[in-house]
Image (tube, rainbow, N blue to C red; front, side, top):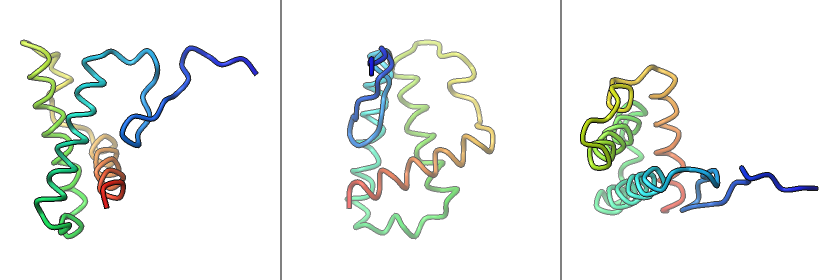
Length: 101
């Protein structure tokens, strides 16, 4: 079976597409590291945060990365998120938390 150019590769337990821009790879790695450190310095008590709080933490970390990588990020990169994205960010936090324990 022929492999496509969009084959996935694991990065810190998560998957990025081969053609993901370098800035986005760096931002994702930084967010992963921020969550990992947050779980560690919280003594593993992040499980007591609400789902909304866990998702908000990921969103805030990502927004900070957008400001790091872009002088004037697109409004959609730093806007309040729709409910589906908030749910996705909470799932991301949960997966990162699980990967660090």
